[in-house]
Length: 391
Ligand SMILES: [Zn+2]
Image (cartoon, rainbow, N blue to C red; front, side, top):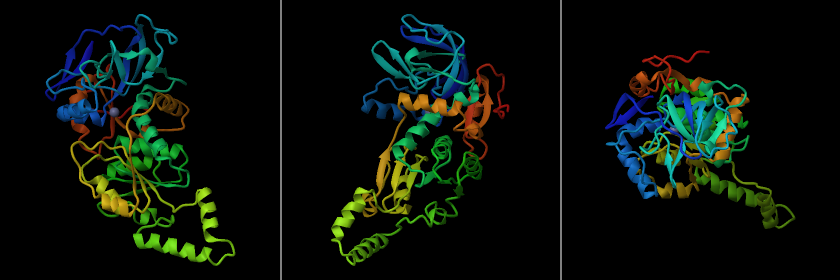
């Protein structure tokens, strides 16, 4: 089979033996595979990533001197069942799969380990237990987005955003766009998106953002989210506390009884949920500094290396930081079904499709945020330049 191999940051189309499914695995014919920001990053910086993964207990993350086939966001058709499979889905069934593969007792990251080649290839191996049939004849261009959209769904769920909560999305690359799509699918009424790139801001609008901000010109925490009752300064919070106390003390009932009852009913100062989808040093501190008091910050963007932030700033404002990663199998399955039912429409973020020969150029094209967000690989396509998907 043909595949794209990465070694020492070089991407080459190579001929590899078609993999054979081991116990519990199925071989699938790849229909589409997304190019992920992690792939772009791993191409040049996988050794740093591998060191962090190794410290977290996973030793087989790709190293720059190994030949690795990327691709962990894919959909394809079942070609062959390995031994000991349940065969609930027949050959020819379109599926998506969580990108994990067993080798003996070890579990590997598909497309980011030499132990588990990914879907920048004509065929890829998946665990049968992690494969989910694609319902409703959902187009492969959309089904292949299940994995990155599941990342967004997990972030939104961990953000515990209510419909009336203001959500602010910082960074409108594929991760930020996925978060925007899923916030709107959840019925969140006010979604503000911020990105330096006009092209990305247009995509954020197309994905459902209610307002977009160019952070070079305006703060995403300024006029765009004004009028929602957030507390912007420490004196505002002290004023609210003292004012509330004085008002309650005019009543005939002891103030602490009313306060306690109000707390039990969930009364608390209004605050937004902010999604950090940039992953560049300094962004977390900028958010902490600019955000209203009591904001919850959900960190989805992966900032490699060390970063600086001032805990005292976060303390003064009682900012809550939550770091999130990946998704659960249930979130993955539910994301696929939301896509198939049309509850989430990420079509605007797909800005191009290429064949295996075009992967190198697609990586270069993704360096320009004005033109591209998500490029899909169609292993059967001869296209060497990313072209707009049909339809
Ligand atoms: Zn990814």
